[in-house]
Image (cartoon, rainbow over all chains, first blue to last red; front, side):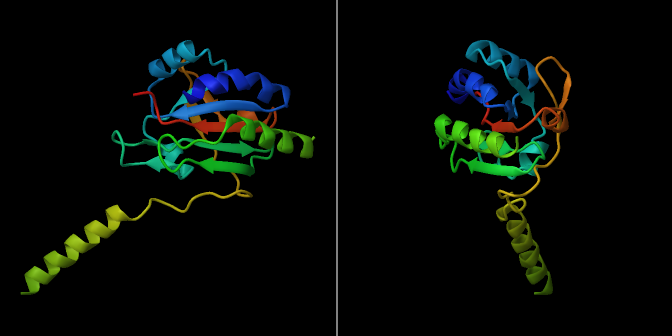
Length: 111
Length: 65
């Protein structure tokens, strides 16, 4: 489960000087129970109308009535996308180590 | 005959509308779209709040079904 692994890597991302936020179509209470289950200390945001998911171009309309493709965006402090990985299917994800590497690149270059 | 071709055109245009992908994907170097969403406590969280503090990683996950 991606969020469980992220919960473990969250400290490293924070130490590198960035923050992390998770978004899905799940409703708020589900997000809350996800946080409990995975031990996530980052915020889990609810996008039930998948508006933001569509804005980011990662909406998968063909599964479960519409969910997000698993995706990662690393933004610098100006809000510019410096790295992105969009999964081609519901299980295609970047390794968390590569996310951390990308975060380090962004935080060291914008300090 | 004219009705049939009009119907056919309608069917084709409906199919084309559903088959196309919604919008062009973002790419590195683009500005990330702003958002304001509710967190698990019902509080509104904005991307700009995060960016005010530094770089941000946004994870979209499929949902837990």
